[in-house]
Image 1 (spheres, rainbow, N blue to C red):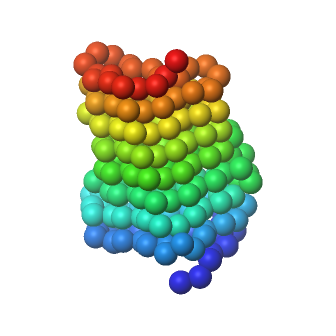
Image 2: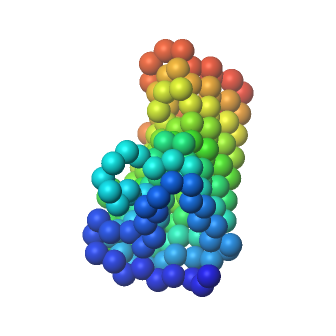
Image 3: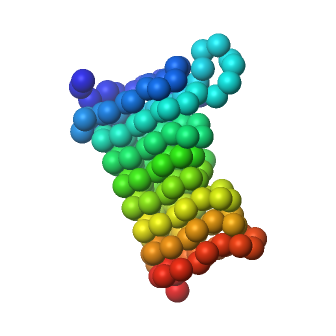
Length: 188
């Protein structure tokens, strides 16, 4: 594998996963460019049901409007995703959109840092409009959101534990609804 430069058109992806049970291990390599598209996305070629068993790990993405978009049950781990040089990155782009396990990622300079849910743990997000936008029924553990408009926006019920949200302009931690376990979070 080598570094990839993506120059694709809007609404296209540099890497498209089109079948179940695929692991994309970037092995430290980078997908970069100045594209309005998505670096890594999942889309069935036959238009049927959602894909399952997808994993993206161990690499970097920079300068692309949207980083990684995967369906429910996916894993995104060990990624460094920076949208600071992407076209219109601060208007509507996203770093990671996934529901499953989102672990140990660094996301900077997107509209949405990490959106989705499941187990969201050990991630660092900064310079976004919303650092973490998490669906109900998730476990949000040991993450950091800083220098954004809003740090964490979590739909309840969810487990929200040991997170840090500081230096966010509008809000640090918003729990939407009832039934969230809000434990040991640093969110003044």
